[in-house]
Image (cartoon, rainbow, N blue to C red; front, side, top):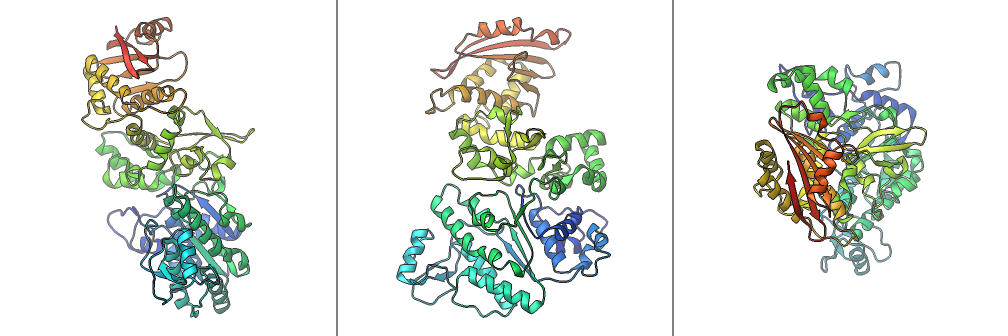
Length: 571
């Protein structure tokens, strides 16, 4: 392998061969390949985006293609040492849905026969208009026996089939995509003398891009049902199948038809298959931790603790194994500073709007009150109003605890990158016009707290709550009232010491700056005096008696009918 005087970070790299040959850092995950290859046949793995699924699939491809030289010094080389059949090449069919935009048709054409509504190969009949990619459009094309642009899903499958048919010398027939795939599996197995390996990367990308468009989603499911039926009917020609995705859509044929497809997403044996474990972190990146600590003027231990708080915390099983987000961690080491690198690559717009539409109490995202079962978390149904399964599968929630006796999982934000990034995305959905420079943005409120400017602080909070939108729920204010308090003061925690409480015995919010301590008590449809009385009666300030900083007790009263902060007292 190439030896360099500096370290190369594989940020965004998905090609195992190129990574190894060009001398990039590689976290050895090949022991998982040995386990998979020798203990089963067909697998499904769900992990969030940018967690290394594509790189792992590329590594599987190199393994099954017999490229032993790429695995020099890695675990699987040692594990396969006594296996006389190791490193024999198998025909590999790699289907990559990750690199296509499924919003637009591809520049290809398909012909539909009115005798059969199966999708055919490219035809030459004159196009009599451009039907849509909807089921109705396909039916129209079938009725008129005309060409139509391929919807992107069919387009990428068509492109793969054409490449494979040329490679294996198959004569393309006027047949459906599924029949052509079956013919390829049979031909490859018979001509190569080895059964086939099928690797599918990000199978659900077309479905996720179609969320909210039931017509397109139903069409994609129909395409999948036809194409992947080959994996069931031609199973005798298969050596190994591995399918990855972010979500596991229920009622989709891949999972209902392939009875032997083993879902390893929650298995402790594979909890570290994607991401970076603490052991891998310390064994591979000790020099990076030290350099970053120097730049941040921290000790190595302090830097490691900060990295763990920011990027670790993803648990995918009932066991204790947790992993760091690899995309964020590698970027942090390369740039030698902390940042929300994973969050910057995509915003959870669909999920944020869904939470707002449901009037969801967002405090539950971090107070460890969300509990559910593996069955609920592992299946996603687009008609399910519960946002929790999708929040978990997409990486915005993670397993925080597991009750083995009841087999119940407790969920919460995995780390501070996700917590702060997600709440920053929620803020404009819950409060209108709260962007930078508005006077009611988080940085302005931070400045008022640090300078003790209670007048402007009151004005900012008044404006924040006046911006809460009306809803159709019976109690339109309660969850928004609580959620806005939670979002604002949690986001302040990035810059000042801030605690938000939802239980008796503590003030609603406690903020500490270098010069000031604030005890906030918020009352809905009650007076500020009542709020201050609770601070005194409960003894919230006693812990600060010996503190030399200025202590402010802040009572605030809100009128839910008029949606305003109407009462404010400080002493």
